[in-house]
Image 1: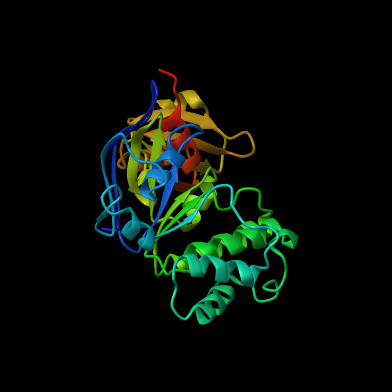
Image 2: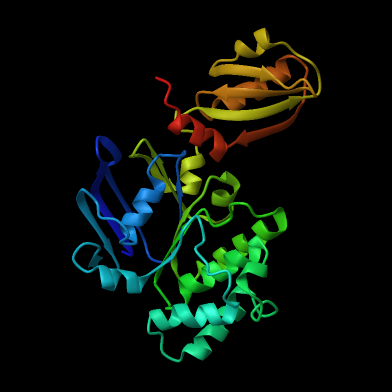
Length: 304
């Protein structure tokens, strides 16, 4: 396993930032690490990258414990923090040579050229970093995180502040990199997770509240099925609620469609039968998945 987190707790004074957190990030996966502000995302990432120690529990990266073998862990990990710490007065190529030298990267000139090509910095490589747009600075950040060819990439809010075009470019780049490396990605953007992540971990108030594939997470957790049904004629909510197995119905005012919440799949047959009995035609019947955003809100709401 690339990253194994076992029963990790982190306490700052009287505040418990992480509370008995456990999860596994498997090799070759892109994992979305989600949570509201102050939930413990950045704290967890700093522990994995050996910036701060945990209070209790254990973390290993590619078989190396973060406390016992921090140097070996850092060789296996590339880290892009939320606030990309670049030297703005250095030129792109110069900066990557500097970072590669710190990591004692062999054949450094070739490796720098490879990174520049991979992240699309060919035109910008001879510019000062301070003269680059935010999108290109993020590319420099990704290049420095990968210069030593780590097996694991930890990316903390990598698309914050980017315009839509830059955002799409960085997403595509991360997805391409994820074919060869394990990536743990912290973000507030739900569409980003749906677009590029194989698995989603959600943390709230220092505790893991979800840990499964993104597709599984989007399935309705309460064993209720949501359908959008459109008839060719108008009908009433009272009549629809009489269908056996229908839990809730809500009218879409824009057309003749209804949002049904049903107990099980067999209720669909009852809806068709209802239409026949009332001389109506079912124009569409579509099963709906709950959006990742609504799931996130449910899991991270602090209302009792």
